[in-house]
Image (tube, rainbow, N blue to C red; front, top):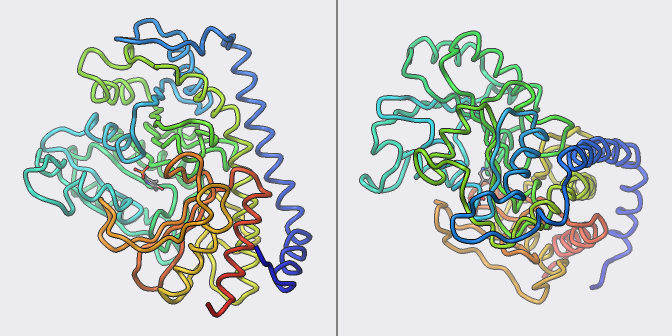
Length: 418
Ligand SMILES: *Cc1c(COP(=O)(O)O)cnc(C)c1O
């Protein structure tokens, strides 16, 4: 890969400027790693827990212990983490269908939820497919304020008009595919307090995707009833092959577990088929891997800001998720960015990504992912829907070194004419 002096110099300059930010990221990673290792010790994590169970998977000590550890890591009363939750969307669907009943209302308070949830909720898709809407679940949405913060007066208003039918107050921590701020854990905590005070009968559900281990606490530590995420993002540490988790209050997680398997069965069954070790190892790695991704994001922000692009967050801003956006301004630059990331990946570096109609998404999407685990976005990956203003969303980086190579490659491609 040919990298110009301009990009090499800019990268060097970036790393000098970023040193104090990197030190803070390492500190958070240390705190989270320490918590996880203390729990591994407390729960006597041992080799036997990595054994495979089959069939019903009764008494799978590794699985049951990991659920307990996961709950404690999240400072939640209960949790389950499963390799056979196929993605974040399924984990979210399990949580939502677990809690919502006909006549209930779900209120999204950070604007439109992630694209793939639109069909789950019934905002779009085919009537009769089994969306929440098909089952008589209502949906309301409140936008963030112009400053990108939660609009508490509007939330209060919605709580008052919906009344007791309000069952789920839904908040997405990360920006997803939207041009908005990512909410901090403290802001979500404020929401939890507000909902408890004004609608104590409602569950606060957090789409925590991309947020795990960026801060020292998760939203459950601040009173969220349920947090949900994917193992091929932060909490799988780049080690988990697939999976998802749900953590939260006793009743909320129990209800979700009934949707995971069946009513009455919950999370006491489920063969782990030899996946326990990668889930444990993934959790162990998660704070560190998340730190690598965060450093990569800061570096990219610095470089692309200096190349004249509008980026979010800015290079020196504190983060609450690992996503970095760069407004590329054109389909051509968006594609170049993604192609540069692809060329700077450890796997599939020789292929050229092209935009395509992806299931669950409404616009064509271009995705760059040269990952060991297919679709894993804790590994360096970039994607963006082909719509104005052609924002590229990228995240990940298993190691800072490889993330840096990917970013340099993307920068080189974007400044080149071909
Ligand atoms: C990734 C993500 C999801 C789930 O997406 P999957 O591709 O199904 O794992 C949901 N919400 C947000 C904010 C996400 O980033």
